[in-house]
Length: 336
Ligand code: ATP
Ligand code: MG
Ligand code: FE
Image (cartoon, rainbow, N blue to C red; front, side):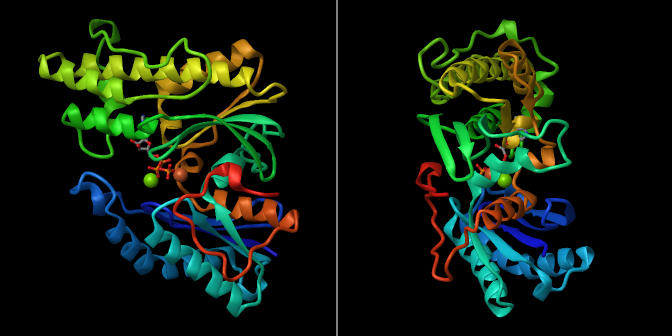
C-alpha cells in the first residue's frame, strides 16, 4: 500500500502520501518561517509546539486528498533525526502511534538520507539518479559532499569546518541588513551588484579535499560593510565567492568518488542561481549530468521522507517501536 511520510526535524511541518512506485498522491508543507522570523532564527521550543499543533491536521489532510485510509497504508516513515529533538519527538512519536494503532511497519528515517535519496524519485526528474552518485547537500544546517553508493551506504567525503553554507548566506544577509532567512534576499540584492568591486576571500579554494569553511568569509563581509562598501556589490561578491568555493570543492569531491554517474545538488542553497550555474559547469566539464531536484524537493519536505521509507521498506528495513529520535545522526552511522 501507499506510504505516509512525516517531516518535523526543523521548522517545516510536512506530510505526504506516495504510492509504492513513488508517485506523489498528496503532499503538503507548512513552513513556520513567519513564527521564527522576528527572533532571527528557529526557536526550538516554539518549533516543537507548532509541529504538535499542526501535524494531526496535515496528516489527515494528505490522507484525505490521497483517498487512503490509515489502515490501507503500507507503512509510515517519519524523520527521526538529525534535527531539533522536540520536533523529532513530535513527528516520530506521531508516526509510530499511527503505525502501532493500525499495525503498520514503521521506518525511522534519517533526514540526510532522505535528502540523499530524493534524486531517485521516479518520474520527477529527466534523469533519475542511479547509484553511485555524488551528492552535495547545501542547506541551512548542513554542508557536505557525500558519495551515495547504495541504500544505507554513504561515504561522507567532506563537510564544513564551521558554518553550513545556508547559515553563511543567512549571516551575511543579516550583516547586510536583510530579513531572515536571508539567502533569497541576498541573491536578489546580488543581482544588482558588481562582484569585482569588493575583494572577498575564497576559503579553502585550491586546497586538497572537499571540506568547507565560511567563517572567514563572513568576517570579511562584516569588514566590507563596516568600511561602507556598496551593499549590492558586497552581496554579489559574497555569492560569487561561495559559488566559486562550492564548485572547487565539488570538483575535488568528484575525484574522490570515482564511478559517480551524476552530480546531485540538494538543500535550500540549491535554489541559488549562482551556485547552480557554477555546479552546472563542473558537471559539464566532468561529463556528468547535474541533477537538481525542483526546489520544493530540495528544501525540507515529506515527499523525500516517504520516498526514503519506500526504499527502505523495499529492502525489508523497518524499525522497532522503541527507536529513539536522534538529534545527532551522521549518515555514515546508517546501515542497509
Ligand atoms: P537542514 O535541511 O539542514 O535541516 P534547513 O531546513 O535550514 O536545514 P533548507 O530548508 O534546506 O535547510 O534550506 C534553507 C536554507 O537555504 C537557508 O539558509 C536559506 O537562506 C537558504 N536559501 C534558500 N534560498 C536561497 C537562495 N536563493 N540563495 C541562497 N541561499 C538560499
Ligand atoms: Mg528549513
Ligand atoms: Fe533538510
